[in-house]
Image: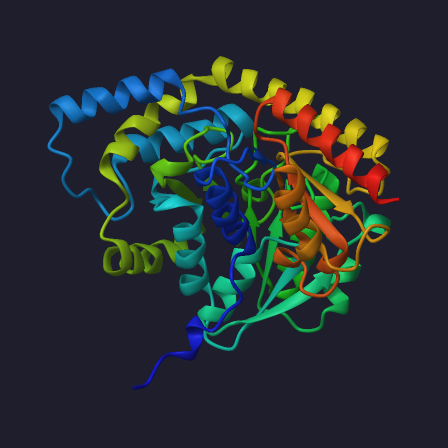
Length: 382
């Protein structure tokens, strides 16, 4: 019986690590979770109150495929508040998470066979989605010489492109474009006829300066955003797009047919998320403390070559002095010391065997204990 080749894509290895960690926990073992990129905190209290009210008093039926008007209007107002940018609500599409938004963006903007530039290292699921949709991912290597961010020269060297995915702050590196750097990338794309797709799901989680939005820099850019990270709403499966007016009809038709509508209770609750800044910024302050503990603890263990973690909640670390097989190394850490981390092969198919991604979204105490165990393991292995 025929089976489609589009499903023959690489696994998302972090999910494999999570599965192995869950098995260890089920067997009574302890696990310190540095593998998964999700906040340890629940949705903010205002969101949970709004959800309870919706559950008690709303029918919770289908909504418009592009989302409820009240949420689209609130997202639009957020761009004025956060970036000083006017975004009409009719250019906002509420989506089933950033992942659903990315699928809609790819389908609306590109045809089968189009070449889409992505960073190496970069988010694994984006590369795999691009392949599954019949598009061609074109790896663009970023590294220490550019602080792990894209430049026009790197994009130009990749050859003809139809689209480019830029993530700032980045998963897995945490590297964040400055406003000038992102402006140069956006300008290059506009001049070259390359559609820019900007992954901004870690906006709000930065440690030096706020991250700029591509929506302010290019009239043709598509912004992918999410309530998962800064807003601490991973399981609510809600995100949004800010897209050019000429793509909104296609996005709406695709959303109608693929998803019907985003989750209703999540939408009604998410309106309150934008008024929970004090609670959410307290989470970011905790991430900052955990980041410092992780970086200093890794350095004490001899793991010092890392990407600049300007934002998000990840450290991308070169472990080539310890192994040339990061998958085997992380499996050993989980088995021997109960520390779960993600092998770099998830994010870089070429050099990922030399790298590990550490997430510091869990408690600071857990991060401190994890790097203590890693340090002891490294010293015992010398």
